[in-house]
Length: 399
Image (cartoon, rainbow, N blue to C red):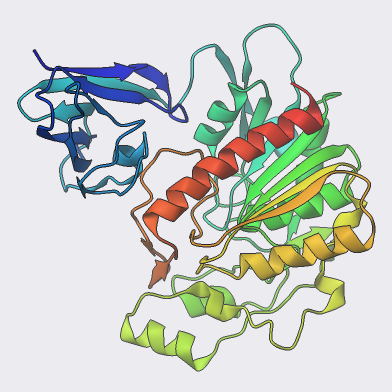
């Protein structure tokens, strides 16, 4: 009798699952489906000579993804319009298996952080040991990435998801954010070795913080920037938010020089016509980058990992991160550094893997933003970026 085997059936979200269907007729075509109620995917496989479909070895003959990918059914899910429900792996004519994919792994201690004006959540292994600290910074969406911190903590870190705007008690917009705020978070983490991980605008901030505070021993900037860029101001429409001529960051009470936005005719046309907006149009690098806006990453007292997407439509992260790479090379940076580019990936690689990457258009202030890249390439880049991040932090901070 045919049977679905999923190993493990309960595991953290960033765990690769081993999914097999056994007991089928040799060469039988079989549809395997994954669903979370509000999203679903499916693919058709041909059983091998033993009557087995093994998603770690077999590519679908048709379906929501191509090629051999153990987690293809999960990143290729698309919305169903239904309510969320349990995660199920289903096979026509065989049955279904419920899978528990944990946003918060077991064995962690959670602490809400509110000291000295901080807004964050700290996850750390509940084993009585002192683990290296990692501050996790989100991007222009604001808020904090608590799930990311929980998943990172299971790999042996005290991971602090730190909000810096967009929540109660903090600035509403990404305007004049003091670097000293993150400095306070560094102090909060005590005598641990410290790393900083940031995605998008958080990647820009991570490099700035590393260049400012010698206690930072490792920086990971994912689809980030080695250049300080203009603030994202208040307003309900995109051009309003881009129109405020002010700094994103301050240090010692002074605004940091920044690369200003450009608003070309093509960007205005897309906004007026309601077409998807690639926000990278607002970044004009044709006349060069003012030197005083470059982040002095050579001051970072540790390793630097830059991860970029070649088809990022949110901003030109490859070119912006290449500025940091150049400065590190020119100054013979004495610590490990690397710039990894994923040519076909889009903007959304700064997160733990194995979650849907099919949303290539996302709502923005009065517009729809184009994220870029293909879902498959973005999913593969996200998985590789997460692996590299963990390995790099482990190497630089010690776990």
